[in-house]
Structures are given as structure tokens and as C-alpha cells.
Amino acid sequence: MSQMVSFRRMEDGTREDYLLLDQSERDYAVGLPDRVLDGLRRLDHSLQGYPVSRLEHSLQVASRALADDADDELIVAALIHDIGDELAPYNHAEIAAGILRPYVRPEVTWIVEQHGLVQSYYYVHHMGGDRNARDRLKGHKWYAACEAFCARWDQVSFDPDYPSKPLEAFEPLVRKIFSRPAHDPRYTGRDG
Image (tube, rainbow, N blue to C red; front, side, top):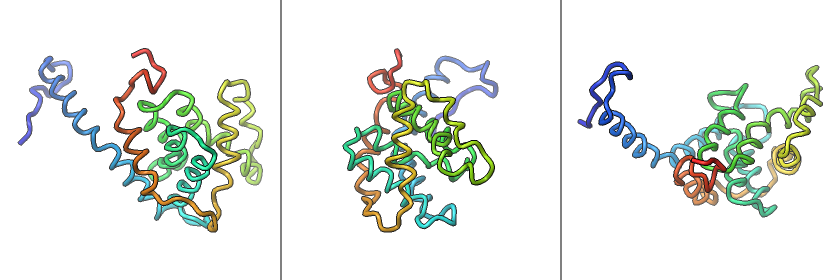
């Protein structure tokens, strides 16, 4: 049996308790790349109605990013941008951004977090929505990058004939990005 903290209420915890929990979380984080890859595999059987599975869509988006010589962070972001669909279909972009945030620069997180709104330009007017709702983001310094993410990679990636790379081709990048120290200022733009 593994060690356990001494408290039943957090306010009663000791330094030793919290050091134990910190180490436990660090040990658990080592498996994050595998859990991300498993989450992507589950997308192969979700959300009917498209000509490709959500996994194939994600592979196409990442393959297009790779073909455009995007950097590693953007390629992994392209791969997992819809990973939240499984548990949070109405705010999936926030979930994907939350997964990425500790491991990539803020620009990449922002692009993923906003892609749902920016992407809605292509379809929301068919359901009575405002296709220009994304315009409220236009003054943001990363808006053009998000618009390009959606236009060049995301909205065009429902093509059953597109020669996307298999998930195994992206596995080394997933392992590289999600094995970084979380919240490291070299990757996230944070000061610590």
C-alpha cells in the first residue's frame, strides 16, 4: 500500500503531507503522454455524421500543420485541439487548451482556446447564429494566427481522401511536449 496523507481536511495537512502529494502528482504526470494518446484514440468512435472520425479529423489537422512546417507545439496543438469533444462537447476548446497550457507557449494555448469561436464562422449562420461573432477577437495579437489555424488546417480537415499521417507518426511529439516540466517558463512564457 502506498503512503497516505495524515489529514481529512486540507487545512490540517502538514508539510510532509503536501510534499508526499506533490511527489505523487509528479509521478502521475509521467503518464500524461499515454493518457493523451489514449484520449485521441477514443475520438475514433465518437461524434457521428462527419465523413471522417474525430480522430481522423485531428490527424488531418496535425498532418496539415506538419506539411506547413509548423513548430512542434502547434503540431501537437493541432492534433489535440478537439480532444475535449469526448467529455465537453460544448466547450471542448477550453478543455484542450487546459491540457496544453502547462506545456506550450501562451500563443498556442490561446489559439486552441479560441478556435471554436473562430471556426464557427464557417457554419453558425446556417443555424441562425452570427458568423461574425469571432470579430470581437480581431484586435488580439494572436487572432490572425488562430484564423489561419482554422482556415488552413481545421475547417478543411473532414476529407476522407486526405493522406493524413497515422497517430504513431505524432507519438514522439506528444511524448516530447507532455514530458516537459509543467509551467516551465521556457515553454509557457510564464515567469515561474
